[in-house]
Image (cartoon, protein in one colour):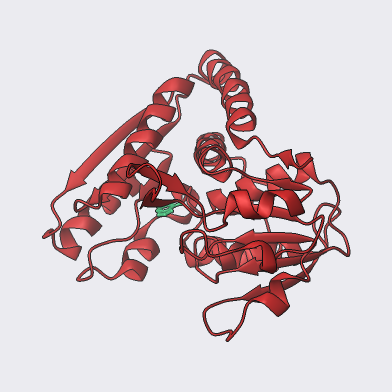
Length: 294
Ligand code: GUN
């Protein structure tokens, strides 16, 4: 029987720990972590994510600000918010929900965030630190994946991890984290993507298969080695052909793959809740200055 990797439960545990740490931080140092969230436009998935992030802030005792700007907002207008939050000592973390509308240069916006408040870890300074193995903010979804692997799989040294997808948000950072020569990582990492004519020869080699391609149920039984661990990062809304109702599915065809794997993350309830838990912890670390003073 495959183990279901319960990201929802782990995330709840991490939030409970954080709630206590936040109380202590307030009592001992009078600091309440503050997170500013910026949403531009009306992408329905982004609206849901930002709302969930703000709710999670409230649950652990953070202060959060949500600014929702119209899709037609200028880049300068967006940058004005970032400059204001960079200068505001009550704001410890700044998150710009991606994707941004096409007329806004995403890199310019991410570059404007003070790297010490970059709780998403998307600033080039933090990405560079990650690749070099230096302390810095680690992007939330990769951090969540590593935490699940640490708890459910153990040391990955010498294991073959295959990452499907090369995004800046998941694929590139998670691959780089796993190949670091550290006791928890030190894996042999392969990254494959849409440039591959056929994914099967790559994915079938995986001891651990991390799928972040953004295509509903693309990974089938034929892609997976017997006994593999599968981490499904996809969140796709589909109309179920059997019920005619909308539902969330991953990038992995869960039911088909389940009999072959040793462990797998469900969608929903796998990686998704971990992303938010890691965002909260990054914001706590930003508030306590833990990252850059090491
Ligand atoms: N869009 C999809 N995932 C993320 C994320 O982790 N952070 C931000 N800011 N935007 C996203």
